[in-house]
Image 1 (tube, rainbow, N blue to C red):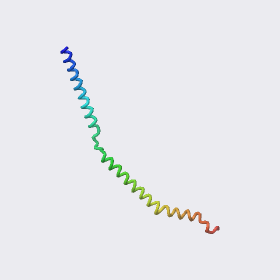
Image 2: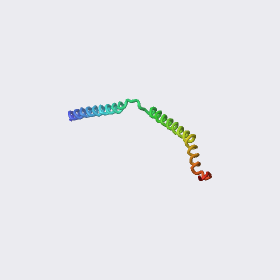
Image 3: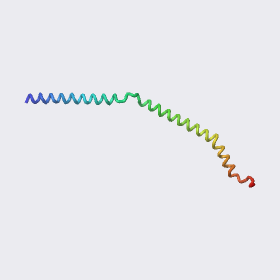
Image 4: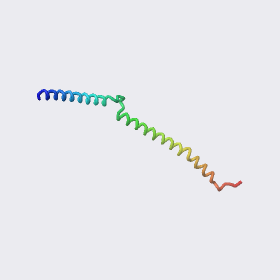
Length: 88
C-alpha cells in the first residue's frame, strides 16, 4: 500500500509539474505575442488626428461651397428663371 501511495504521489508531482510548465508557457506566449508597441494611447492619438483632419476638410469644403460655389449657382438659377426679361 505504501509503495502505491509513493507511486501515486510521484505521478501527482509529475502531473503538477507538467501543468505548471504548461501554464507558464501559455502565459509567456500570451504576454510576448505582440511586441509592436501598439497601445491605447497610440490608437487614441490616431483617432484624434483622423477626427481633426476630417473636421478641417469639412470646414474647407463648407467655406468653398458657401463662399464661392453657392452664390454663383444661386445667381445662375435666378437668371434662368428671370421672366421679367425680354422675349426676343
